[in-house]
Length: 110
Image 1 (spheres, rainbow, N blue to C red):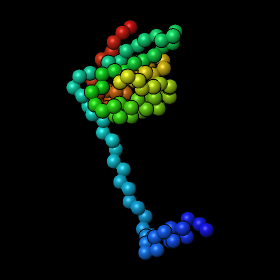
Image 2: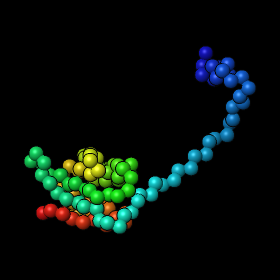
Image 3: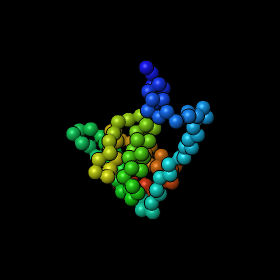
Image 4: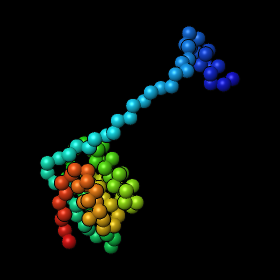
């Protein structure tokens, strides 16, 4: 007995439709803030890390931004305590990517 037979037994009056479902995909727009985001460099356990802080929008938007940055730079990283932590010193590249998206970015540290 396949899935279609089981569905017919559960819902005998249902008539399946052969029309394809139309799903509209809308691009998610990130919140652009007035205050600049902070992009700083730190050494943690002897390794270089780039930290981005100061996003005022929703946490989900910031997580999407973190995923996009990690994908574009092809590096590892994480999102913790309202900060994006990227492995390596990528301040210049990250600042250029954020400026292209319309964010104001401020460089902090060496």
